[in-house]
Length: 216
Ligand code: AP5
Ligand code: MG
View 1: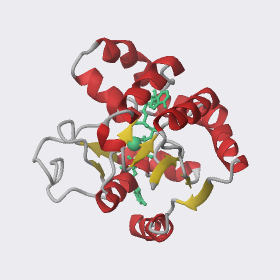
View 2: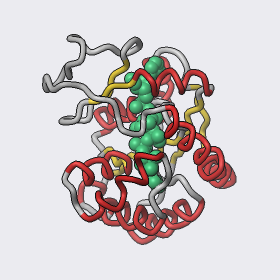
View 3: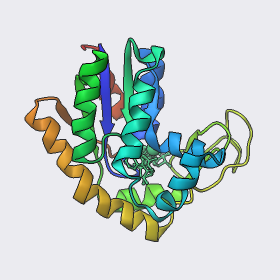
View 4: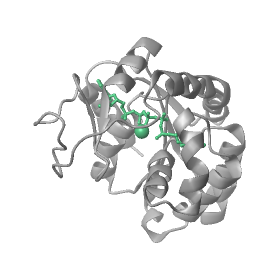
């Protein structure tokens, strides 16, 4: 069973690694950040609540986020496992997830914590470009699209995320240290945490993750 959490600071490569992991294991990629951005794009009530919070780099309140994840994890496609990306990122969220896992009979069994030095994160966030249509992520230097400014998959014009600016990044990183780093300790105490170095080529980390997750 692969009930997996991907953790790490903004720009650690959670989304990048998640794309390859879900393809290999045929499990859904549940990114709370992607779900919020989709809601913002569709101007739903949730999107309207979350838009300004996300743009400035703050965390969406726990009750809203937990409700969203609970509903998502209860769907049929999670019956054979799931990959959570960017959730939980506070202790109350981690506690709520423990309850949800018991209720649905699919408790978390692996937590991958990707660490990357701050100066590398800044460079990755500054250079990231995303596809507004299909969500694919690129970097102007490290992971260039085949045609500059265009998505490889759907040809759309690439954009910068609204929270990928120096001011919002600073807030995101502070929130990570204050609120999310303790979540790593929460899972370490439960012997579920595995720490990985997210620097260097993405395929090196990918191979390490496959080697471990294949055994689950
Ligand atoms: P979210 O979307 O989760 O953003 P984040 O955690 O800040 O993380 P990122 O998506 O920025 O980074 P990533 O680790 O996915 O990196 P990526 O693979 O793209 O959350 C956004 C916001 O939503 C939050 O701030 C909050 O407001 C809200 N939210 C979400 N979840 C919440 C929750 N649980 N509770 C409350 N609020 C919540 O890579 C980054 C760049 O680096 C890319 O350009 C990529 O191409 C490049 N790159 C990746 N790997 C490598 C590599 N190995 N070498 C070189 N370049 C690389
Ligand atoms: Mg991401």
